[in-house]
Image (cartoon, rainbow, N blue to C red; front, side):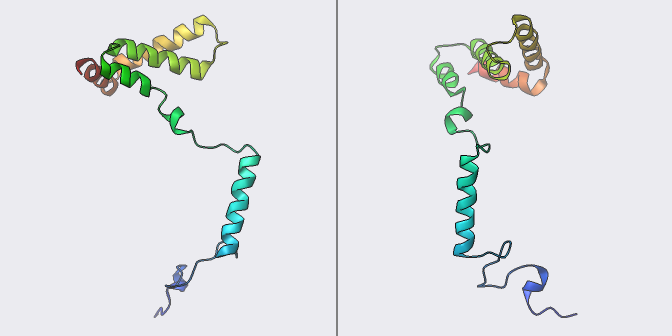
Length: 122
């Protein structure tokens, strides 16, 4: 069987714009813009802003500047994780239990323990 056009394979021919749901070109761009606006007004989940993605950047800067030790930085990271995941209304017992589990994981996991040691040596 000889195939002469690539559109038989579901691929657009060179120079042709593929259509999505029967819409292409400027109409597609308009529908995409409408969908983005609708998602913004309905409160659809969005990606985290860069400031939230680097929630511990300040600790890294303090650690590099020598203002805090690696152990203090790790303690602060654990506390921030607890604050973010449990919230301020969680019981002290729950925070202590989860904090101990996180610290134990940092100590027991070979990869994480190596990273903690590397922080202490810098």
